Length: 347
Image 1 (cartoon, one colour):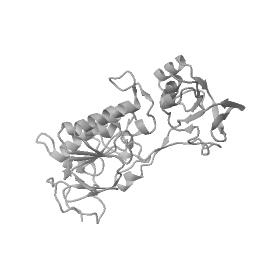
Image 2: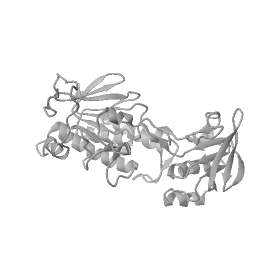
Image 3: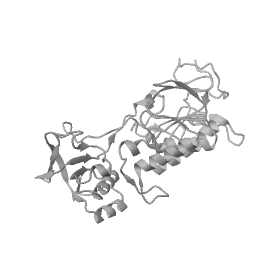
Image 4: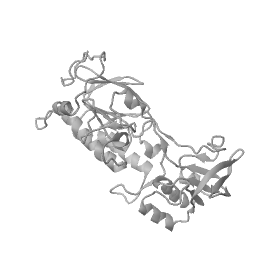
């Protein structure tokens, strides 16, 4: 089978791309190297999302579930725990090689977010030793934290969101190393109305305990503070792994992100990108912007793969825009056509 579009990544951007692709009746398959949901479910499942239109507040996990259900209901084929290894140009199609098989497609949309991400660590004594014994990088479900003393670290929207969730059921302390938070104003307003105890201008020195977390030691402007606690939640950002982008032959910026044009096109014909993995002037990383970019990427992939009579030849536009598009010499050639005839033969 030859798909009209392969989407790599099943976070908000990838799922949105799948939904829009199916509204154009494109044969669509979505791959994710992990589980559906991206950062929403892997890092911030209990977080409240306050700036997603249509919901005053929606839990990150529930937003992911709604997107997943909609994508499935409209006909997207979704493969979890299947990593894309290669994207190879052929005569008429793109060949996608994954850890579980090979697929053919007329176009590809890269929506991998921050890639194979993992939470950043504080690097203090006791952190590694007590991970899973009271040290966590995501906030457990609310019912699992009732009655526990929680100390959280971070100063952005996600940290404050999680502190507010925890504060609704238990005693919560939020520690930030700077004198001011870097969150949105509406979050700061909610924080001020809450019972969260904020400790500012403080650095974590150690996490203390034997079989489980018992306390944390802080340094606040030269003064040592010991805070008794049962659970330490660290939310200071993530470390991204976007090495796959280089393997796929995509032009990368100095920041390691995919360079795209205003239409979400990359340097490779037929491959588009959207979400946190892309870079362009004025780029702003939000769920809603990823979804808007996904919509554009799908519409351009539709023009590329379906060649509707009302669309200009995307190939000619891309060639003028990107003078060096051809892949390296010696790339594999697909002999089985998919009815497009736009890539040309590479030898």
